[in-house]
Length: 289
Image (tube, rainbow, N blue to C red; front, side):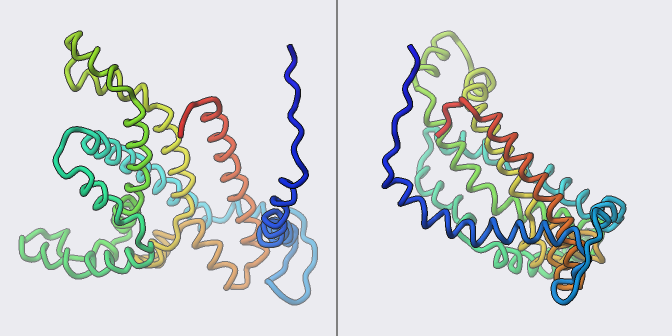
């Protein structure tokens, strides 16, 4: 029997209208204007001319921009692995029968509510002063100097701070997933002789697979937008070793490369949109949240 579509009351569209207008004015129209100017030679003001796809061709052949993409994707790849592994293990511990688990959950989510730029400045001080002092005290040569000044190690500091702030949000999602697993499943497994490690690998992981997919896709997409923590830690340095895609775009806007960086931003938007569509496809039909 074919299902009949339920008629939507007009008042609901009325409620939707203010948000739709604000979204259009604040996001859609500026985005369309930006994409339009990516086909010009505009510097952000004054006269401009159409140049076709020259900006897009230049983006794909610009070593600096390609380096920023490589750095950003590598950072996102590393952080998404570190965050999900640590957050999952913490979630398993925090849903088990441990004392003060409610208080521990509160402590672990504190980084989530602190501004990224504040966190970055605090860790900047630690990496620039406290850690080198410990390195000198313990006689560890490579630790005696700030890794923020090392082009080969500065990204490690950014990954650590990004993960430190991102773990709480991922942790909460994993806790929700673990709490949704019926306790009877573990009781039956225990009766059959399954140990804790077997329960973790054969029961817990398969049943929270949907949450893992969501955390990985959402996390990777969010880490591609890395900006404030990088600004507070290295400001893209040393040199341009830690300059992300977002930093490259914003720097270009203030440096007279408006149209050029709008082409870069458009390409970045297409990548983010592709990841969002992939997320919807992978999570469609999953009973999550």
